[in-house]
Length: 456
Image (cartoon, rainbow, N blue to C red; front, top):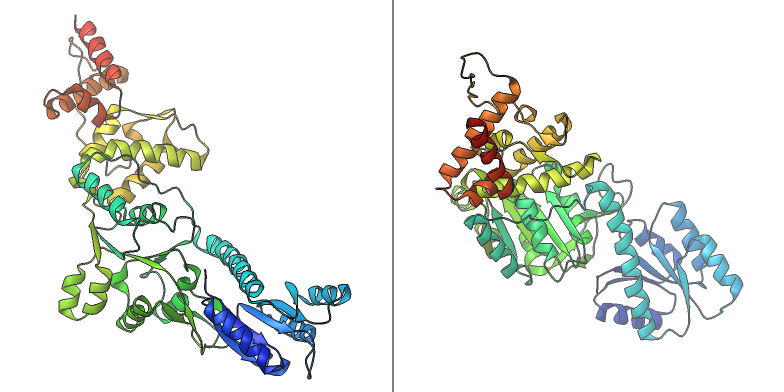
């Protein structure tokens, strides 16, 4: 069950203590207040998730506590307690902004069940906010890879995903570390919970601690309302710490404590929050070398490097390029509202296969997205590709009479030259050549037969 920050508000010490023990045993962090004034002082920081609040108290009523909290912009969920149940009391509490109410005497099981329900409510609310802020949920699933390097990566993913092991993914920028991390989450027992991606290098250093662990209202200048940290948002799920090598040393110490203790404390809060989060980290840097240089903590490195997944550059696994191209054509065309049945000309495929891909998978995705925008038909031509990718020497093919061939004739001749080169590189394996070119075997044979008939 997710851990909550709970405030018990009741003027009777025995009830406060009983409820505190019940909530604590269920895994929640608990504070107590004996009256409305004391409660508002605690609530003002904004880090209390749920308040169990008595309706009748000596200074002012629980309904007045709710009204004052709402006027201050406090978003705590109020669960009212009363021994004087009536429809009017319930309606007044709801109008004031309470979520629900319970009748005294309270049963421990009912309190635990209500808190569990409210934990789910809070999780759904915060997840919707994170969805809007981080624009999550894109289809980053791994397409079918055929290179030995990626087959090994897939094997490692399926081995580690069902466990709760911390994972470190290394590889060059754009190689697909984010896709791998999401695949680990989707194949884990946490797949129905939150997946929170965090780019450690994109958050200003002075905001990192607040973003990671949250803050209370007034914790620093500009903290006009409380904020749940990303680790709290990821409770019961997975947090993906991309570019972990960019994390400053002071935050490395605090991250180490989070991993060891499974608790976080928001800036300005006096209460730690229990969490259950799986960490997947990624970097394009050599962390072992950073440890030697003193820029990365050795103890954190060993904590993160429990299970290592190395990713190779795209240039070293060109067998995957045709499958990636199909994947990105389908995905990007859906985004753009285009026909997904878009083909790619063999000359364009050859250009994509010949390119070195310094930007790896991300550069390939961008190239396909650009080509889909420029394509005049349902086929991506070589001319639709970025100039640096298509900067190949394209030969001219004169007619037997020596005159310049038409564009159609030259494209046909170039297409046949590309096919024959692919067959040669595949050592005569036409099925493999067709696969590398992104066309069917029957299409490859037909094009060769058509060319043979023209020669005859």
